[in-house]
View 1 (cartoon, rainbow, N blue to C red):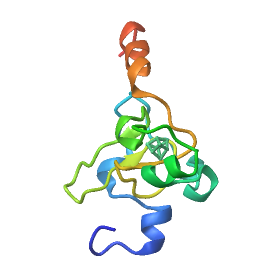
View 2: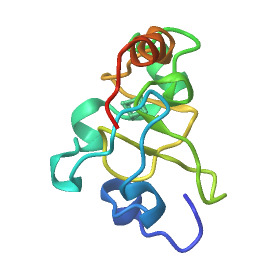
View 3: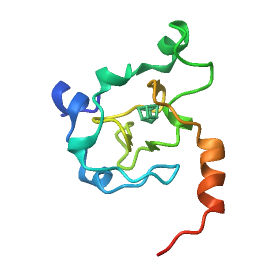
View 4: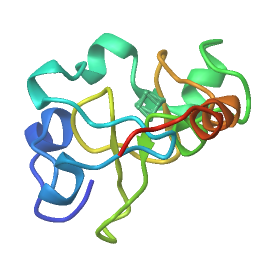
Length: 113
Ligand code: SF4
């Protein structure tokens, strides 16, 4: 857990302001904090534990999830476009979405600015 961050904030947020309007590595906007999923509701845990429990395939983690917003402020944790609180690259949850493919979809689609 980052220094100075309470257990409550780690689990539920708020995350540092740099993440609040951030876009994930798969181009998903982080929505209204009230609409994010609770970690407990999506079985958020270390990716290695998720593999042991048969919930994740080896190699899948937040680091290669389309919804992950990598660390922006050097505290070792990022955030997620779908799940509340601080998110570690080595963790996992059951709504994991592959970054590969998602990216291609985003790149091939026309986007209006
Ligand atoms: S695996 Fe879950 S918590 Fe991790 S980035 Fe993806 S959606 Fe968010």
